[in-house]
Amino acid sequence: MNVFMLLIPRVDVCVLHDTDTLRQGLEKMRFHGYTALPVISADGQFVGCVNEGDFLWHLLRYGGDMKAQEQFLVRDILRPELNPAVDSTVTMDELLERAMSQNFIPVVDDRNCLCGIVTRRRVIRAMLVEQQANADKQLAPSTIYISQP
Image (cartoon, rainbow, N blue to C red; front, side, top):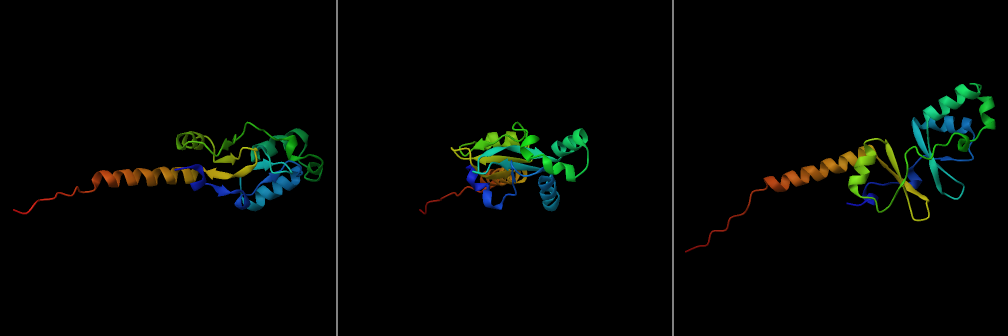
């Protein structure tokens, strides 16, 4: 199994742009109900992820006035180490390892452009399907051929 079988393509992924204001970012997260989102540059390069805690800490540091948040950009709170991306040649074992600590795993191509994301749910579901298929193979009755005299 490869990562593209589990991938939610970029066109179906809600993203923030590094030039969005913090207010735009918060509004987009609230509208879609997400707690973390990937961030891309204007040319589609993956630059990192932000989560609701990043916004909260910024609000506490600079004041909670939403109008004031328009002067700050998403790139100001960006944490590149949050939900690091993997390339398209990632193994299922590495995806599973990442899924244990990340709700989603960004997938990038060889130009570092965001291809999409793989969610923890999709990784777990794929592992369960694979485990069930292996169990079914072990339980399948073997065929015995008896020759006629």
